[in-house]
Image (cartoon, rainbow, N blue to C red):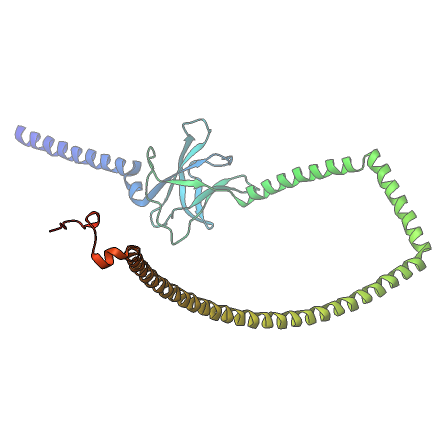
Length: 317
């Protein structure tokens, strides 16, 4: 009996242990293990938009279709007072890089939802997690209502500026100036009406002067054409004359070179002849001098030279 009782206790304990394990697994699955499989989680930082009407479980939509829900939100760390919203989106919904999220609020109920304007379909999927972030971050966008509100605010500011400028324009000083200007215009129009005939005559004179100017311009154009033709002819003649002068100067240069060469040859020949004549004259002068010396002493010619006139190496026997 005791053995059977202990066996029953063992079976019951094993069953209790199995039940506890199954409950633990079920709790883990319910707390997020299954969510990590069925959802993809993103973080959205809202800095410019109010989150009034947004709560945990509020739908996250894309093109008006619910694709997820708000899991949590909290104030982000830092000095910009941004609100960090964690959104769980269906796993099968592709979120591309460049996607932007904004708050869309029902004007009647005031319930807010998050609308995602997805990026280009050709862009890569938003999968990368930045440093310090737990999930990929979807950028904050702006809704059409925000754009309209901004435009209306800017329009109001511009309208106020226009009113201020109009008030400054319609000041008493400007009003008096405008009144004086209108009076001057009236006076000017009266003078123009009174002198209408004179203005017509002046206009006719200007028209006649314009016609004369056109005629003078035509005459000047014809004269310019004639002058151009004459200048072209003179230029052609001058060109031909210049070419002929160039040929003549070349011929003169050749003739001058030939004359110079001939004069040089003549000078060389004359110099040679003068040298020969000078040599012959000097030889003749030497012969005449010798002959004169001999004729100056006839005795030496007849009896021979005396003792005093013996040449070098000569002796009397």
